[in-house]
Length: 55
Image (cartoon, rainbow, N blue to C red):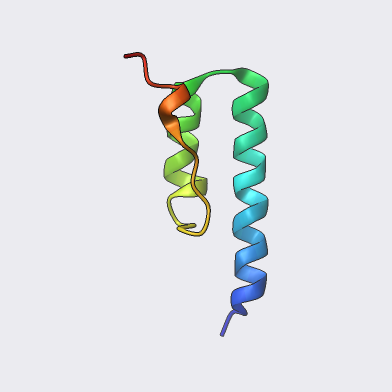
């Protein structure tokens, strides 16, 4: 059984990497792609896409 604490830290680490990659590239589509792999499995963290909305 995987410790939820370790899983949580791994999730946050992946999210942090994706989040920083987004800000360094300033590409919203890239963040959307990362969202599928890094953020979606981690309901504990969420990024507001209001800044990426073209409308």
